[in-house]
Image (tube, rainbow, N blue to C red):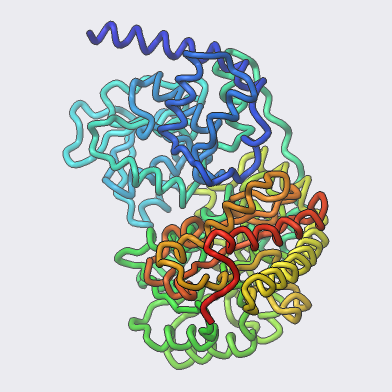
Length: 614
């Protein structure tokens, strides 16, 4: 039976490889980029099974591939091509798909295991250098690296082969619990590793292989000789990131494979900078769900998390002040804020905010760092604004580059520091290099080719959002009689450089609606609008330069990791927030505006018209 199973697996793998040229010839345009429609996500496992069924039942074509749908809704979580490549490894090694993951990083597969269990790693070649091992151990990882496989399996530890083999030449790992090679992780189904936790580590702390790199590996599996593109100079990109953030720090910005690995490296660097202390991160309770969950993943014996509430009418500065006043302990504190906040689009009075932070530092005697997420408005020059008030506060800007900077063509992230954060930036660089979480050549080149003009793109997207927002408010007033406010940056915020092209809003609750109807209203509105697939896309993210207005309900998408009680505070009359994000331009803005008008009428017509609860 074992021999028969082996033969079947070999035949399946050969059939899989034979279909790769047709696959790569027929890849639909919707499979590229960083965001994918989120109304009917399949999951990696279902998508993989559907792809294998397609191979066995019909010819590959753009339409047949398009009908498979999408594994996940965002590049950093999973792409269709990374899932197909992982399907190959699951066939090759005869393990189920949840036991296979590709990573952009060669080291993060080990971290995904180390977060769950001690490892004895048998290293082939000089893949895991001493600096990397030192950083991992300093962060509390129980790691032992040896050059030869032990005669007997170490008790209480996983035995892992860390191979120098390329992704297109998977090595045998007979006698091991897991194998890591060229960013690929495969582990046995009986080794006790939680598949959901390994996936969560990749989802939040790393990313899959980039789509161009997946194409290269798939080509290589067929025996094709592949040459990666030459790396373009990043000098102009780094200078631009520094200028947009308003930094004059001699330490250059640090670019990563995606946004959250940037944040993860920042947190790890604080632990390395203060090796004897416990670090506390203070952030909004309704911050972007990825940032929130990543912060939760870092919580441990030397890392705490505290939150402040900014939902609804809550005052940003007062909420921060209240949370800081309640902190215990003596270790360093990082105040992590989004300017503007997500999804409320609040920008605090910077003088009052910085005074609150300074007063806390003075009264507590603790080291305080400031981290500002400016993804919604990369050209805000926020570090220059901070420096005009205080030059002694170590401050960094954190930007997800997968939005307006890359025009939505690739995932990436960066950390930019001010002069006071120079020592921390050195540590961030050490962690990035140790964990191998910088982007690949494809990602870097895309950034180099698209970063110019982001200031103009962000401004034009803001102006489009403002125009359509006025139509949305007028349409809601006409149908319901209610003046519905938008959670949007103020004109003064925009003049100060915080030109976000995203806003959120609570639709007025229809009269006599059931609780279920109220809870569904936000998503119903998205469902109505997305019928026009030329102009609207039910999707997370923003800043894409693709003429599509992105629609989502944060509570069920970007805030998936946020506590239900915190999300409940942003609902009004039982209706959750809807979020709109705008591109630089649309095909015909009047068509988009008319779609908004029709959508408002339709979503309220379903529940009986314009009478609403006052």
